[in-house]
Image (cartoon, rainbow, N blue to C red):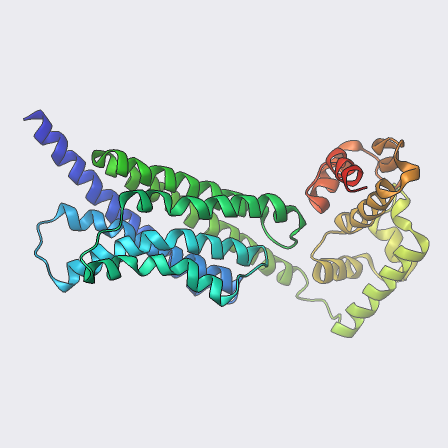
Length: 347
């Protein structure tokens, strides 16, 4: 009697988690499709991946409801297997796009071929081996791991935190799926893991996107009354770059927005607007970008090998080590010590 109740509870949990997980995946996929050209190639791939996850967990509904063999159940069963076999290639493709190393078509064709094997197996009365289902996902995770380790630090204009989160999430999904192969009674745990991860990814991505969009809206509203033309902005930016490179004002630890605007003979709010809109930085971030650039050059020179990094920070305009360390990490993704070690190894 007790075992029967446990079985019933297990079935209820599987159905509940599966339905919620499918809805989560489809909403998140729809959201990614709806945001248009915002990183469109990677978003399309990630939306397809979420749709594949929805197909994969639809199998839980099939096994928990009485059904006859129809074309509909055939589609769910074989598409759920095909969807699972597409996880690895889709993850590989997604990360390659983010790292700006998109694979060529023959490579894509080769890695996606196993995804159609369930349908081929059906016509030849052949079941895909369990070991293949268990291990197929892993090589792609391993390739992505070494790809990220090698190329992530050198790739600009990407959200490194997001990339790490997504990778860890799919390692957890792969681990939970393998629980199913060990003990089918643990299927509800796999569904729960997928449900929580897809919900987290969807919410995280939504906040990230709407945070950016809100920032854009606030920036637009902030400068709504400005009468600067594109030509004027470009002119001010050119003057600012010339001033920074010729006068090296960034080396002055007391440099301020009013001081620089006074040198350029423009109002501070106009200079702030140009830096914000042209460089997508605050004034302090812009100044620090020059300081970090010069400190990196100094660290790379043999004559500065014995110079303390803290001394370089103060020499190039930083007035506190905490602000220097956070700025260095922001612009290089390294700590100063890590960067110096990298330079030493290369030389």
